[in-house]
Image (cartoon, rainbow, N blue to C red; front, side, top):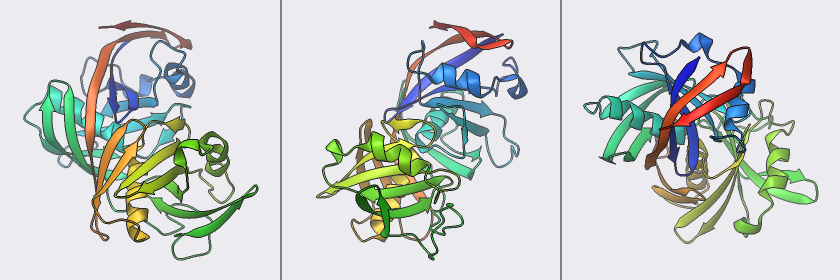
Length: 297
């Protein structure tokens, strides 16, 4: 079987996209599952990525132009990905340039996308990331509080203050000193799989310097990534909630800069770039899903 793909990155978050909106592309039900996705995403493979995203026909065409399914590098499915959504929006716009303000279905709900600027395959896009939820049961996190903001959290010989929020997926934000030297790869996986997070959690370690917030993210199912859109939103809203900074919040990630805007009540807006890296085809045998060949265009 042969599949066409596009590789896009947004703020350093790179994903392999398969567009199932076209009739000639294989059916979603034929798409191989976790073992093939993890093999494809492996950085040692010919592609390597933070995961795989499927662009699917919407369940309600009157409300959305497409549906997004996003898989982490380990093959697990996630509810949302802000950087992936911006890249998806760019792909939709390239196929239909008249679409500049539209909505996409995700497991976290409908998300609106607005094309702010485009030059070839370079885009600036704003996406509505929905309303944050600070309720422990919505995240979920097993703290017996109305909200988990600046909650003491002890791990090994360290004591952290954590703030937790759902952006359609779970996040735990921790402000630290000397972020560049902080052992993200040590504490990230410990917090991701800690028992207080029954569904796991994305962990954002941040440091504020003047009017700029620096962020490193340990993503659930993917490890440390160059950027995380929902994570940037989680950082923005928790920093605003803690009165550490005013909206809009400019966040420096390892892959680039994102801007988060929130009025403290309603939806969160995420603005950032997206650009196409390359495209090609993948040939694979369903009987041997980790055995595939790639041709780049």
